[in-house]
Image (tube, one colour):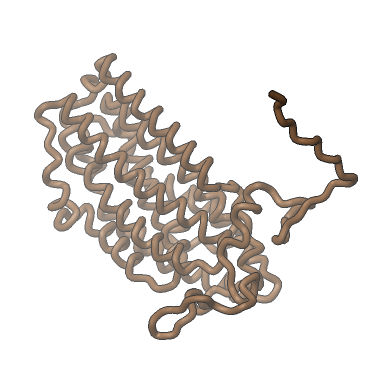
Length: 349
């Protein structure tokens, strides 16, 4: 019986390509192919008009979702070129690496190196409370990504929101590991700490006020230029990571390092977006004034959260740094970041 073989296709001359988006380079990247044009408006691609609206007749996306103005939101590009499939693959590998790290730490008895006082206070009391911060910022970012005015701005906010959710789940998972390593481990007071402990009330105030915002770009500025750069770095890097190492805890810094890799990705796309807005030939001056004002406003909230958190620096058995030096460190790093964007550095409160 003869086997059917399809005829060989005739090779066409020339290099024929098709794209319906405007790439930054000569040809669109895979990131641009799979991102640009996914969120269309009647001004771009959806020329037939909005197919759906809110019940009260509002358009699904409107320019007044932010007071920031941009001549072309779609011209922004995420320098990380983050897409769903490689993001999921990368996070899967990261979670597997953490799981192997925890297993190795148990096998080597590394948990036992940690000072008991640090585990009871630094971890059970304070670190287990930090997921409330991450969840609050996750909620705010969920609103921001819904209102963002282009696909290229929406996607990185979505991935940052996913990061926040993954980080809080990582801390919760870590609590199970700590319970296995220390039968006396008790983190049952974390809800009370978040609601009533004075050291957390500054952070709670800031997070709740960020959640209440209606301007999606102000949310991005409040979190990525101010709160996470000051309170986030103070708590996670200067306290939880550095103090853990000083008190014999070699496991916690591994978890925080994984989260900081995500933060570095967020820093890159946020800087690119701010530069895109400040360089706008028509609206750049307007945007600079607005963003400088937001940084001033949200730095005050972030510094209030930092100052309320100060007492925890005196609670550990071994103190890796003073609160004053740790705060100076994070403020200096933020100042460098803001200056690199051409923004004004607010005076310390």
